[in-house]
Amino acid sequence: MLRLFRALSLLPLGLLQAAGGLLGLAVYAASPAYRERLRANLAQAGYAPDRMALAVARETGRMLGEMPFVWFRSGPRAAVRRVRVEGREPADQAAAEGRGVLYLTPHLGCFEVSAQVAAEWRPITVLYRPPRKAWVDKLVRARPRGQLRTVPATIAGMRPLLRALRNGEAVGLLPDQAPAAGEGVWAPFFGRPAYTMTLPARLAQLTGAQIMLVFAERLPRGQGYILHFRPFEDPLPDDPVEAATRINQAVESLIRMRPQQYLWGYNRYKAPPGSMPATQPSPAETSPS
Image (tube, helix red, strand yellow):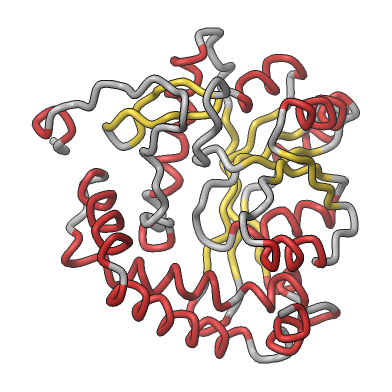
């Protein structure tokens, strides 16, 4: 599989994304469970599934199709050379002051290329949850790393993250990834309680790091990406639920910039084993005004 991915990385980015888009539509048509979750999550956020579901499925497939190119293409035509950066000044200012930068990158656009670009500027440590399938884990570990380091999503992984931020380096997290029981709180996400990690707030409060919301917008026809930065200006409250709510609101705002490129098929509202499920709001409470 590694040889196949390396071979695919030599193909044009636009071709890989187009093939991935067809794959995404095929999966949407063939999987009732995936289709139902994608449509339900779109509706929960106030979007009309009949108008957006196919576009979301196509973009999800494009994300999968571009993986070989993003992971293994090197040289002047690598994915990181096709990224236009907008709004990174607050991150540069934090670095000049010797402060760490905490990048929060949701499952939006090409989130894989975001950390690669950040690693071009300074060392970055990314929280890493090993895939369940061994062959996928092998692919992930075979990627060129450079200044990009990964740590496991465990209690032991907390120390390298703290150390990196205190050393004025960068850390990357997926803030909309459902944490394990005991590592999150229930906070609203598009109007519905979602088990949300408390780690970003704790890291920022312990280190004084600059929080930056980041996503790489996928441009059409293999033209590359625009890496958008949005600084999180105000200090987070001490209350973990309030802090998680504020972060979720910031993530929602980012997603609404390009909702077609969000992974609406991700099971964001699952209750991890051992967590206490939150009371779900009624449809009237979650309907957009």
